[in-house]
Amino acid sequence: MSREFLQFTDECGIVRQHTVRNRPQQNGVAEHANRVMSEGIMAMLEESGLSASFWGECLAALIHVWNRCPTSAVSKKTPYELWHGKKPSVSHLRVWGCTAYVHIQKDKRRALGSHMEKCIFIGYPDGYKGWKFYNPATKNTVISERAEFDERYMMGSNRSISAHQHNITGKDKEDNHGEHYYIPAPAIPVEADDDDDYVPSMPQRDEPVEEDEGEQEEPVEEQQPAEDEQRQPQTPPPERPPTPLALRHSKQNVRPPGEWWKVKQSSQEPESDEDDEFEDAEHVHSSSFESEPTSYREAMAHPDAHKWHEAALEELNAHLGNGTWTLEKLPPGKKAIGSKWVFKIKRKADGTIERYKARIVAKGYNQRPGFDYVEIFAPTMRQATIRLVLALAAIEDMHLRSVDISHAFINGDIDAEVYMMQPEGFQDLGSDYVCRLDKSIYGLKQAARLWNEKLHHALLQMGFDRIKLLET
Image (cartoon, rainbow, N blue to C red; front, side, top):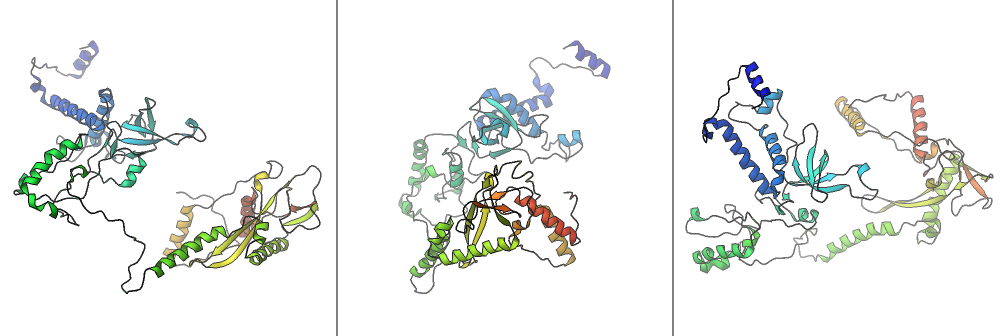
């Protein structure tokens, strides 16, 4: 022992005692703790499939969990609670050695690179609010607080945890890039003379399937050789434990999945009528995308050209009545941004057409910062505010009203000198004339900001006050 340790024991009044040679039982408490930790490390390494070089990380994770578990030495408390004076949180605990998909921070990945990396969970680092992972591809350790865990699969051992602990579906297999999973099959009853002698065989290692089948075939055939054809019930009895898929011997007739979306008719009417209804509905929804033109020229070549023309006239008259632009010749040194028609079909809940809608939008991606716009930030609503208003209305038994403002963005006052090409199909005074915007229009980068300023001033004039700060 060092001099410092001896000095420490003398100052604290501690009397040192030694155990007799080859008599570890004299220090039973410490030796028992060592044995528990040793067995825990072996079990965790064997389950995860990691090498013995990870024993340090394994021991640290084991102690981390052990200190948060109840013990017989302390009544109704954990060691963590005695030391820190509060109950521990176990929400961050995960299966050691499981597969984890760790988030890659933005400054550590390329523009089109993956946002995650496949790692192995190896512990809880001290001094961090996160987890510690090992990347087998790069041989590096990673500490992160953002990760998705697949606690059923151990990447180090290339196998999954027992099916009794987790249900593994087909979707989970696809999410792990075709990795092998152990999937339980439906239970098949095996009748025996003595129920106590029946022990289901659950493979614990990646052993060949032929060896397991050979060990299980003989007792099954000797016990009930004449009832092999009767082991095909449609619904397995609940009292029998499930048998693994690799041990199935009976051949069941696999039926194709039924057409669940069709409602069975009690009458003798043919099902073709119902199929036609679904086909018509699918045709209505699919045709809604095909029937929407992408330009004015395409709209005029459409079978519903007169309806699209009426919608375009309605949109144009709204801009003329609002005074959105004035026609001028393009001044020297100025550039006009493009314009485009956007056509949409508004439908009701049953899929029928409600009306045809047309919008003139500016090609804002051609705007130049500092020339065509300065500020584009606009505040947005918070979901917490909406929930608060709804809660207050419910508590006070008040009525709520919502307002929908048509062509909202064209009411904002423009804050820059912006020129736009005339809409397709409605050129006046010649092609050398362009639209000088006096109001905002859909598609401009600052359109949302201008509309927010307009609405803000209007609400203040009506006597409303804006909430300065909302604590959450």
